[in-house]
Image 1 (cartoon, rainbow, N blue to C red):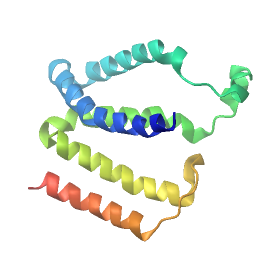
Image 2: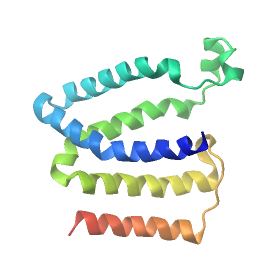
Image 3: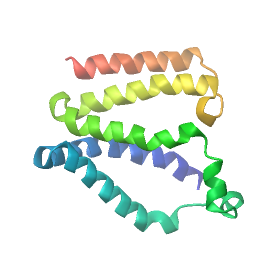
Image 4: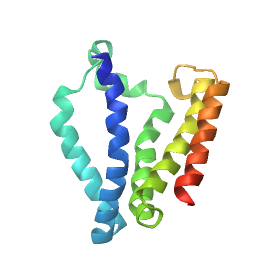
Length: 151
């Protein structure tokens, strides 16, 4: 089961450029508004099919829904808006930037911000200290942006 935890980010990473390309195709045919509605309608349909198979935490599942909702930190509600930003940006920008440039730019920004979130243990994350290898990895990602985007 532990390998599945490592395969999930691999599959998510593989789906990233596919999602951007697919959303660009939708945007070309439908425009931004209908594209976003379509993306989330399809995602919600997929979630409805997947919902019964998702793991639950037995300690929180026993609590009433309203009690669980009251304990959600304010920042946890922003995840959907962050995803919306990604979908909008991808559906509009990927055609002009190309899939590789869009993906490497978003990935590099995610790595840089993740280093900060990890270092300080922000947003409920387990703290992982900033180190020279982690900084070098981020610098290499920035170099990758330059190589992929501007050559």
